[in-house]
Amino acid sequence: MLEFGQTQNNDDLVKDVNEATFMEDVIEASKTTPIIVDFWAPWCGPCKTLGPALEAEVKAADGKVKMVKVDIDQNQELASQMRIQSIPAVFAFVDGQPVDGFMGAKAPSELKEFVAKIADQAGEDTGDLSEAVAAADEMLASGEYVDAAETYAAILGEDRQNGAAFVGLFKSQMGAGETDAAKEMLDNAPIDIADRPEVIGLRAQLELAEQAAELGETDELRAKLAADENDHQTRYDLALALFTAGNAQEAIDELLTIFRKDREWNEDAARQQLFKFFDSLGAEDPVTLTGRRQLASMLFA
Image (cartoon, rainbow, N blue to C red):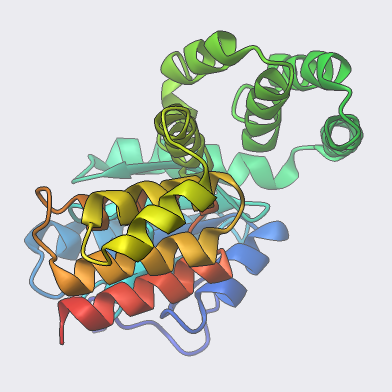
């Protein structure tokens, strides 16, 4: 009998993955087949029940969906990037994006319903919507915010879980100066989309933009910091100003400097702001990945 955490060699429907293979086996693979990701650990009692039950439902779906397992003890950075706070935690990816998920134990009937819901997406014809999203993206890039917003809204009318359209509508509203509408949109995001990484990132962007509105110019902040390199508040403000100006790497470096000098400063403000930056950039952004590694090296030094 297989122990939990092991998979059959001749069965590619369920497999173990790690940080090195996550992009290939989840993000890229989900562009052709929906992928369900089970975050677990050997010491987690509920995981030992949920994991095999979830496997059984995936195998019963006849290849319409696949499953991967991630041991969070062996992949702590990945678990952090996915903001895993408790296990078991299950996420479903379709077309490279997380589309659904849950935490904690589930009844067998609920697991069956969850897998069936995700498996059904394998056969959905999303070509027209994909083309519509691409067209709206072009409008957004060209500064045609009103037209882009109307197109994104129409897409969401067809598919309320379309994360790309939700993000696009938010950016269109922000570009058009409709900040209040964009904020209200985030506050009232559908439950099935509210906790997706891209939506969390939008919240972080909005919060950072509101904070940055009260800051001075970067040159002024640099001059003030040059007079006192231990002025952590000025360095913190400079990091925020740099980030909102598009200089993410330099902004992260400034916050890491604060953390290295005094990690407890202002009730751990530097580390908390770093997480907002990471959320805003997205978990797979190279700057996020580098910043998380640097922070981790300081935490465990």
